[in-house]
Figure 1 (cartoon, rainbow over the protein chains, first blue to last red):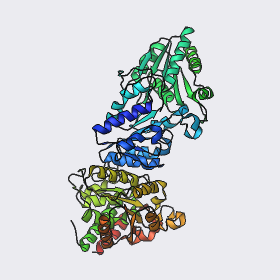
Figure 2: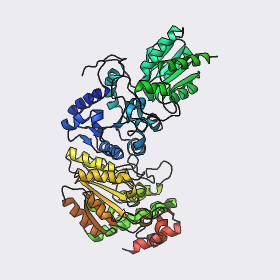
Figure 3: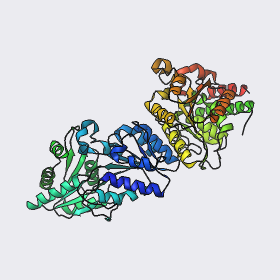
Figure 4: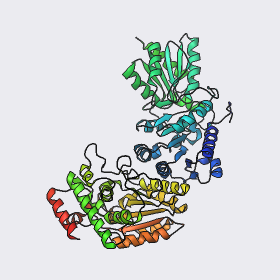
Length: 315
Length: 275
């Protein structure tokens, strides 16, 4: 499929899975009654034996996937992000990761993207759940083009992967066929005064913030960091050594996700003042993304304010 | 393949002796729920399962998921009895660096088909294997052993509903119904009865049998294999600690208990005296 501004991330996923299922009989997809939301419902018709729907039973879905992986299959499981993480935390930990079963876990509508489903469905903790588990890689796609480039690497990755996927179409920041490396953070805009490390829908917000800062004479570097575990410490360290201050920006609780990961890496490798933008000690609530950005302080101005503060803290 | 009841009973005794030696070598362990499943393990590994101890990962083999993962020492005792590794390995139970941890680990122990220990999860994994076997058309039978206390976990019934709904007839599940769990009797804590009716209601074919009788177990498995269109549940009405008087008498205290060298000798004498 050709990627354009209107391409939905879920269509990228389904298109990839369809091609892989045609090529490789080991690829299986399991849903838990949200296949219409993830788009994977189409696969159930095309591959009735290998696109399963277990009903509203996420723990069973995770266990079946582990059993299939142990039988030589390559399972992808999907649900809304809260149910693909905190709901199956123990199954992901024991049956999948501890048992070394290579299952790919897709959680859709992360953070404020859950919008009208509100607090019960709005995970600010899903990355935290997976960040505590060894081996699993955590990937939050930035846009459809990057996601398309990432998926073959995810399939080949020898350990489980948690994909924190927006179903819809965040702004296209990458071009189709972009040179993407799952293990590398990507410097989208070079700068000298402060580094903004961003993930998911906060990447485009951070580029907007950099533009606000430019007008004030602050030259911000923007790093797109779709994988917070394992973190590309080398790229961050090089940037921090250059700029001497940093901001993290994420659509998640700032604790035990990107913000924490960056702070820990900086403390161990290149201590600089860091400010974290994201959700701070709050639950989700209903609303559209623009409203929710205001509730949680996730607008470009919030990122810019954090950058000013980080710069002011430089010795 | 072992066909005579007498020989299967001997194998069960050997597995029991292995369990006692394995746990006594450390001095403590989940002995009650290990001894209660010695008979079904004798019948599975002795007669019904297709496997190669020299090639424990062979494709198309029958698989056993011991979802009550704390019965690891029972599984290891059976695997050692059937040549997956030397019996001397049993003395390494739970020592640092061992291949035999208290709970089953497929990445450590040759012959263990699924990691388990956080209760309720293994049956779903067995479903995954059963689905996988059907997709591959390899004709394998997938066996799972769940605990009675474990059956209080909701995930067991998620798995049961799916297996029944999708007619996974290559799946044979055993409940080790010794009627005791860590904190007391299952009847007092959260009663499972009517257990056979529950499984029938989930569209399983059900056998409700004396669970420490190798002839009855063999008969039920043979009948279960012949049934198509349904997953199978064989409820093993067992005795926790079966075969060793002082463990049986400990009742719920036998979930995990200390075993001294003296107790080991008494237990082995009793087990071997049954020959």
